[in-house]
Amino acid sequence: MTLIVGVRYLFVSGAFALATERRHPGLYRGLSPQMRREIGWSLASAAIYGVPAGVLAWGWAHRGWTRVYTDIHAYPLWWWPVSALLCLFAHDTWFYWTHRWMHRPMPFRIAHAVHHASRPPTAWAAMSFHPWEALTGAVVIPALVLIVPLHWTALACVLTIMTVMGVTNHMGWEMFPRGMVEGRAGNWLITASHHQRHHQQYRCNYGLYFRVWDRLCGTDSGLGRFDRQETRSP
Ligand SMILES: [Zn+2]
Ligand SMILES: [Zn+2]
Image (tube, rainbow, N blue to C red):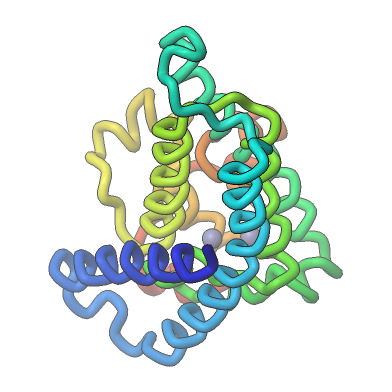
């Protein structure tokens, strides 16, 4: 499972790094040493993510542990989107509060500083976490599949959103149309522009998929810009 997580990371981050080179040639110029560090931390995180995921996958296949189901009619069809949204919201909630906590001085110094050493982050920074932080992220999906009944395709959808948004939120440019990002959907959904500001200002925009907690808790500071000068200063 560690191998799957590692290869998935290399494949998706690599694809978006290539897309970045085509769309914004030279955006990552001079960042090679940083990108090497991002890949190193990310592969270490993949190893950590793989352990609970592997145990759960084994338990699902041999012991019937999780609540993942394969018969689409085992639950009403409306449950499919609701269960996927529920998982995304639960993941977002866990991420917001643990992330906000990790910006306190001690956990920041011990763990979260690794993620913020990417200045500016690149497509390779998606899983660039200290092992302690990787541990807090590794338990979320395994815990959710034990609690929430999820069709396997809904789980695949959640994992795809998690992987793609993790990469694209760090890649240094916005891939979604401006009308969406600055429109009504962007008021509630997090894309690269929102997370960019977190990497620029540190003490705001802690969310993962939704701006709900940031807005409720007064930590939403709006959208960032992708000006290289701005992104380079902490
Ligand atoms: Zn980040
Ligand atoms: Zn942070």
